[in-house]
Length: 192
Image (cartoon, rainbow, N blue to C red; front, side, top):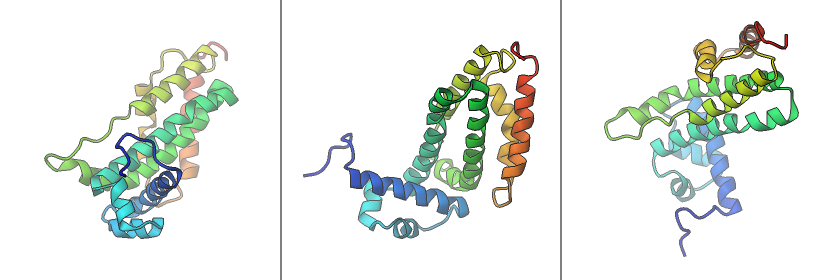
């Protein structure tokens, strides 16, 4: 009996799917043209299992992008539960930087998956925008950042992260840049 399209995946199927996404992120970041069979093999799944989860290259690439975006977005609320709002924002920005570098590596694959006529559109970034707004509003309400900063403002200011070469030792530079941004957000904060 076939599983219904919207039915939850069995635990082994979910593990296979997560492993495929993990390997695909790693491999597609290195090369947009990596054969899907190489991803399946490295993930330890057969071709049938692979194609049941991701029937096309485009489906895989776009799901890797969505998956990574959701992972970054989903960290915002737990960070706010365990840290002061400005510290949660700063730590989330580090996670966003890691996503940005993964996305930079995936850029060619995403472009290939969405550029041809009839191909799906690139997924929106609403989950990440909502997470940024949640963190910014919490920090603003706590008086630890200046009022009125939007997620769009934040993304515009930290957009330089997307230009860091992913193959280099980007992390110290990203840390410096994000500390600089955080210092700027604190200037004019009512609680400072």
